[in-house]
Image (cartoon, rainbow, N blue to C red; front, top):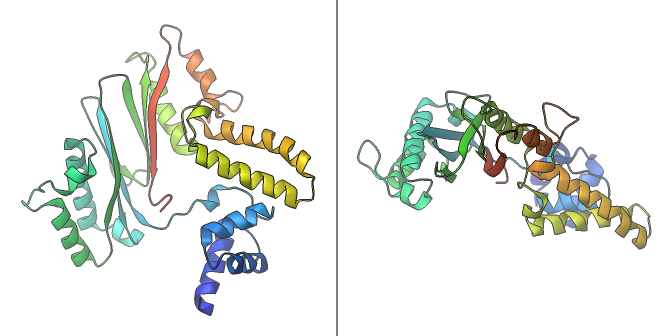
Length: 288
């Protein structure tokens, strides 16, 4: 790795972890320049804590949502810079893709082979956009929520235009009565955008994510000087907190820190029990 690349990576790692120059350099040396492994290395040493700063956002772009007759589609389209994401030609292209995404119910393969207004296929128009704008553009991910069961709600954080933003969340709730407690759906979508749950309940969190977090927690405790037996005991409490913090039903309600999301659902289930059937949150570039 060149000295310039090393310095760039050290700067990036410091921004993500808040750790000092020397420790970041050691971590990068140990992991041969791998940022993600360096973050894990520092956490195991107890130097860096898990934080939202560690979520890598390596690309720019837009997230768009479309709603019609109770059905909702969501799509993320990435560009290399925020400058391009604000380009009117790019925005127009994304708006048309959002319509096509809705028509194809979130099927990316069908989207690529669909026709745009000018008669060209999406995959060909994408190449033309890249050539015209001069940046790599990708149609990253999409999803569709039908209206066969439950009611869908969505929230766009700091919307750039109607139904366009950098963070969009959707939630499907069962047991909602339109005109009575449907405001709960809007608030729930807002909570999801702010709190970033991984699953509806603890059992739904990916086992690989839980195992990796437990490995990091144990290594951090042992490296702090505590015996292995104590590390086992302490890690159980920490992993329980991790599961609660990342499962929607067990999260602290953003509008009342004295209550959990499950409490809010119970309070609003006077006529019918309200259940969360599904949800999703897209943040531009997250995890890329």
